[in-house]
Length: 186
View (tube, one colour):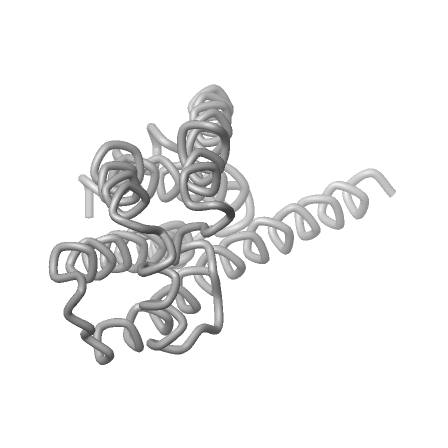
């Protein structure tokens, strides 16, 4: 528990949260912009990554991989290996940092803080799992592994749900802080 406390104490500082926000923003720009998704769409004539889509069938996933062509699939693989293995860590650390920063002044019980602050680890687990599944599909292409493609879509949905919950936790925390401060002032 002391190790978790020490990590959260370090992450829950404003300057760390700001640093992680800037790093996350720059990473997202690289991944979605001209070095990532944008470049992939340029190469493939508009076909983007599976990990930014939600609600597709295994057939649609393999249709997208086919339409990417060999050059697009190779670029996608390299994108996952070079950029998208670091992004989940930065993303997770940012949300842990922000939630810790907000809730350390709200929650008196440290176990509750740990539980809420560590929730974004789910983002990391699902994002890395998603990347591994896509890499597996790309490595075995043209073999169609529909169970993996089906699981990939579910993992992507759950990843986005984890991000959404992290955003909601942050917004709820900010709301609680605002109400607390108004009650003190008034």
